[in-house]
Amino acid sequence: MNGPSRRNGTAGSGRQETRRADPDLRPPLPWAALHRAEPTAARLRLIDWLAGAAADLLALAVPVDCVCCGAEDRTLCPPCAGHIRRLTRHPFRAESGAPALMDVTGAIMLPVVAAGVYRDELAQGLLSFKRHGQHQLGGTLGQALAGAVRASVRGGNGFLLIPVPTSTAAYVNRGFSPVHLLLKDAVRQLPGLEVADVLNKTQGPGRMLPGGQKGLGRGARSQRVRGSMRVKSGARAKVAGRPCIIVDDVLTTGATLGEAARALRLAGAQVRGAVVLAATRPPDSGDAGTAPASPCGNHHDLEKNKPGKDE
Image 1 (cartoon, rainbow, N blue to C red):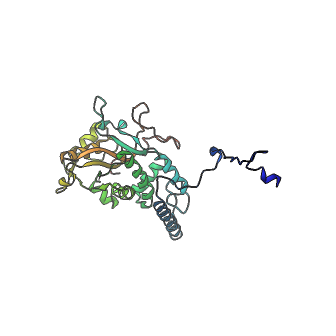
Image 2 (tube, helix red, strand yellow; image 1 turned 30 degrees about the vertical axis):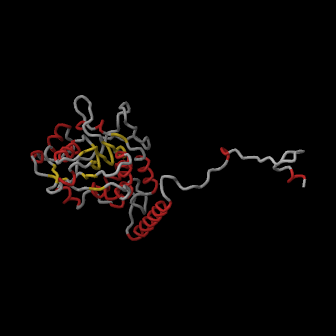
Image 3 (cartoon, one colour; image 1 turned 90 degrees about the vertical axis):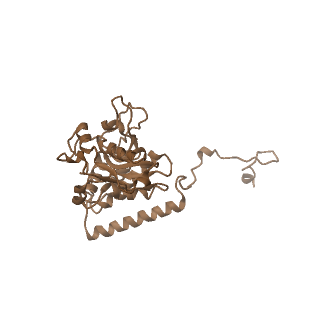
């Protein structure tokens, strides 16, 4: 009994001495993440598994390719989905890149939070969602949009999320409104927030200008959208006095968001800001209060494939 008798004691002493391991050297315990309750995590894992199984079955019947890299069997392959998550991991303030949302003194007229910069897999995924009706991308893009909304409201409840309406021509062409579908996916992850579809496009003076907005500058875009939105008849009571966040898909000059804010304020709403999935211009790194865009991926020319409104 020589060995065991000396394991936890000191030679020649009649008492036991406990040796405690250094806590910094212990492996971490496999606890669940603190930000997500276990039932919620299990439910989300089940949803992910069912979605993956459904995608596998669909791939057998209708072969598809990844919209970003061309890999077979998935509309969005796991690596490209991971790239989109990395590109939207750090939402940032984007109004500094939208001249219509800043006055001549540089004061902010409407704060905007963007999930990511319009480039790489995020741009390709959004274009495929909008132009080709790849609704399977809604889950990934909606998750990114939900992250930007959370960053905008900072844990607050009671906000109304107001989607920017699509034009009649664009709706007829596509058969759906991209912003509304993305927000439908996003709001499932945003308890305490409500979607209020209260804005309408009108045939105001600004809508009389021919052509689309693609290629137009700040002044021309502002002139085109001025007076082009209003709160739906009977919806004023719903937004009057309520804190509202405007939601759109892409931020370019900010003219569309500015017009939506004007219409809501005219109806008595408290417009607290706006959220977009992607901004075509990254924030100026010298601006106070802005977080840098995700550095993942190669920096492509942001003017290339820049979307026009309702494109």
